[in-house]
Length: 267
Image (cartoon, rainbow, N blue to C red; front, side, top):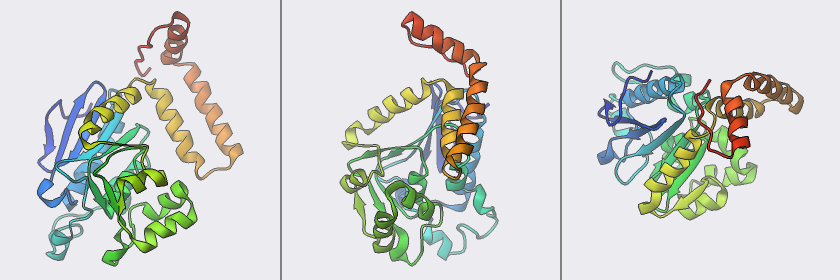
């Protein structure tokens, strides 16, 4: 079970709240636009993995406190030798949040409340669903002399095609919320004042699905990105045969026949 409880904190820079099968993870360095420090990387990964292993968690929301989502890696700490890779902070790159996100079966929703730059942009793009405020923006990192190091170069061509991915990555122009929506990098853009309610609605709908089926659907889509159609079809059939034997499948059929809302248990 996830060690945190509703309203509790895992550490000051990463807040964790849970309610109704939804865990909300908030990056909490508003004075630095939630720039990611080394300890935050490790804590965020730990919480994500723990959520994915908790059968009571059916949806995860990632957001930022204050006016920004995430300004990227903390360059001030890095230049001082106290950030990522400095001091006592050590990790493997595939254990950092954007890579961990690729392995999660639990649906993850990004509540993009404001600017996301560099690492923050990759973190947002790595989520399954993006609900953005009209104050949100993306800033690719090439104008800082670096590249999208945490999944952006893999994700963008798959999300928006080669030419558009090159335009976004190589020109490094700041993308406002309207452009993010036009490119299909957000599922929906809403007024900032409506973000919390919209995210709650979407997260509630995700958590209301049969959790084993949702995990299997996400898993087969994810693995299908690197598989042939035939290989993916066989994987889907294996997942389906297992789902047919679950109590949730029986509950889903019964609820459909009885014209009521299903009560899924994740079994």
